[in-house]
Length: 347
Image (cartoon, rainbow, N blue to C red; front, side):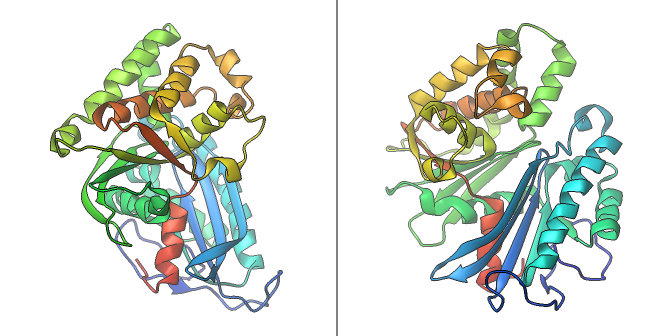
């Protein structure tokens, strides 16, 4: 778990979260009980520090940086030296924030890039040595369940099963849930091996710098094929399909849909967008070249080369679960971790 224990980290498995070390109280709420959740994905490093408030929590501090930990992983099977250095630099910032806050309990998790990389375990050990952060490499199933726990409150009211998805950098998790109870019951789930980084790199490696329209078509085919088995298991005859997306892809596309000059979480988190509009935005972006996409304010150069893969995955999800509207969540794994910690659950 992501605290500063002297225990040497292990690769996988559920282990109890542990108290953070006692430190001098600092910050705006010196006597508040603070919790922290860190999510290290294939593309992003995100930290959230919060304190309980009512039935939820209030964010005390946060950090997010695109680190592209999984860059080149598809070809080499390893985390590259450059990606590791970028990521450790970001984790040092996280470690500093954790030390400066009165964090009572923390958990840090790593996902698909570290699951797949042959040097994932050695990377985890180096992170511990250099930052004091203990990362747990969680399974795809736990990743899916945490994402649902963190964002299901934004699901539209309704009857019948709902689908929640998280398009990551290295994989995409889809979870079919029964949301009739306060804590959703997972009915079925699926982890596809394609996220915005892995799908982009795979298509580029197989087809080179082909026409971007042709590349998008291949991305759609690849993503759709990875959902085939899950699609066959989905219930038939469902009316009023409900769909909720938690990822940088859906928040970015929602920002483009709104025409925002800069990202505004207050306008995006909880937004409901017609699926036809999201398909339209996806088609428009897929029809642009890299320079054109990079000029869109909420995409920029950092996301311009990856957003198209996210569009392809999203459209493939809409194909198998034809909801008329899509819910947008700027929340997920970190919020799920925090809720578990604050409820006294340690794994």
